[in-house]
Amino acid sequence: MGALIEMIRGIRNVRSEYEVDPARRIKALVQPGNYRTLIAEHAALFARLAHVNEIAFLAAMDAAPAQAASVVVGDATIYLPLAGMIDLEAEQQRLSKELDMLISQLERSAKLLGNPDFVNRAKPDVVERERAKLNDLSARREALEKRLKALQG
Image 1 (spheres, rainbow, N blue to C red):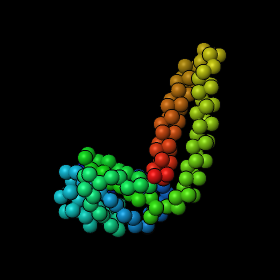
Image 2: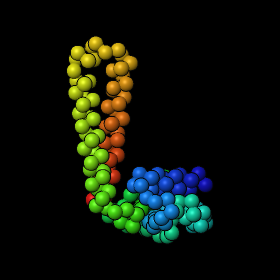
Image 3: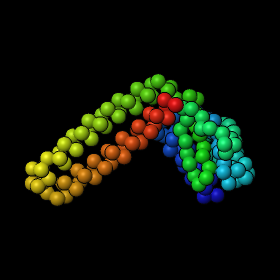
Image 4: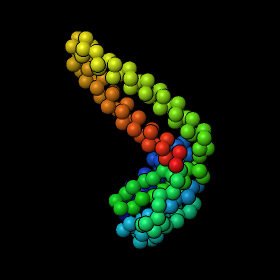
């Protein structure tokens, strides 16, 4: 049952990341791995809690669908076709703009940490906070690039 909860949580996180209307029902394409029975037995609960209107099982050898976000839990992968959830072009523009802003923040932070005067004169906690900020910005950049790539297919 824990795996089912993780799948639902993952779907909800994707919906939140892409700002999908909470009331909108979406389709889930599932490569269930060892979880086929679990998902099938609890399909109604899964559908209700994840706001899914259709669950379609894929074979393990089926290729990942284009323009789909994915949720991986154990050996199961759930694909959520983005075309049915969002305006792809508007979302690409929004993510590109967000990525540009993030890159400028990253460059600013890297420049600051690359300045020996800043590193040597600033309090150690300030320098450490800036390093943590740089790491966080890098992780966010990777996540945004991954989302943009998913949108582009």
